[in-house]
Every structure is written in C-alpha cells, then in structure tokens.
Length: 131
Image (cartoon, rainbow, N blue to C red; front, top):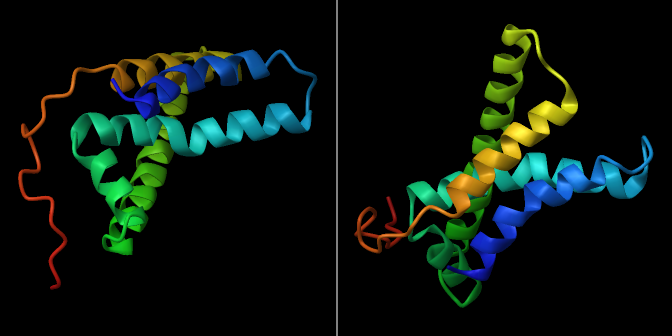
C-alpha cells in the first residue's frame, strides 16, 4: 500500500470534515474542490491501471512528460464523470444534498484506493510509443 493510495483513501473524509467549516470559507472551498476534481478519478485510475502511479512518477524522473499529462487529464475527466454520475443518481432518487454526494464519493474513492494491487494484471506494456 503506497502513501498515495492511503492519502486518496483519507481525502474524501477530510473533504467531509471540511464541510463543517463556515459557508464559503476558503479552506472548505479548496478542500472540497480539490477532492472533487482529482481524488475519485485518480483512485479509480490507479485501481484500473495498477502501473499508473509508477508511470506517472517515471515521468518526473526523466521519462516522457506526456505520461504525467495523460495521467492527470484522465484522472480529471474520470473524476468529473464520477461526480456527475453520483449527483445524477442522487437527483433521480430525490435525495440529493451536497453532504450525501460527498459521502458517496468518499466511500467510492476509499474503496477504489484500497483495492488490492495485482502487479502485471493489466498494462504489461507500459512504454510510451511514438505514433
């Protein structure tokens, strides 16, 4: 279990804790926005592509910079998609509140971040190819 996965697992609960701050407090807005944009998507990306964290880290150590950008963009889009799906499901159920949506995303993020990693199960070819 890497520090990144543990941080992702705790991030949703920290965002929920930030909800208790006064409305429009800068810390509340920053914590919740950062969580919604990054954490559910990155946790899901790491669960779907176990080599994703290693590949993104490799970009900083002299690898191809496109790997880091690809990981960041896919995590952002996946996070926005998951946030939208949770919000729509709660709206259709007639039970939407910001706290419930954040709670559902915190549970989803924690579950995805704590899934066991099976190295080599997917993405056996992790090289970036010019194409």
